[in-house]
Image (cartoon, rainbow, N blue to C red; front, side, top):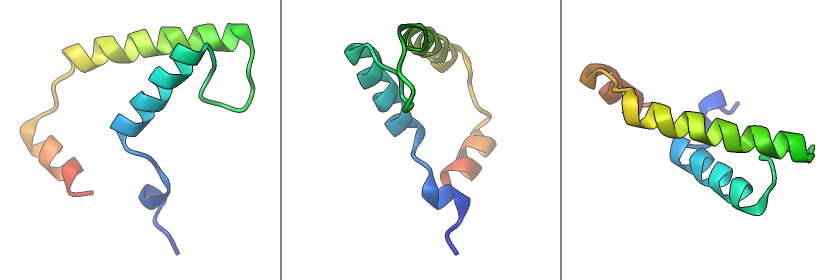
Length: 67
């Protein structure tokens, strides 16, 4: 049986998918509407802000890298 973590994507891969979706005026999901595409733009801006401000504890970062 596969572990759930094996089924996911890395944060970097997810951010890349979001960037590509925003550049194409789309969402990351199957359901595509202009309103949902705008939410994707908004969410990208939120993630950009968090990437700049959130700092993980070094011990936590090390533990997460082991997963």
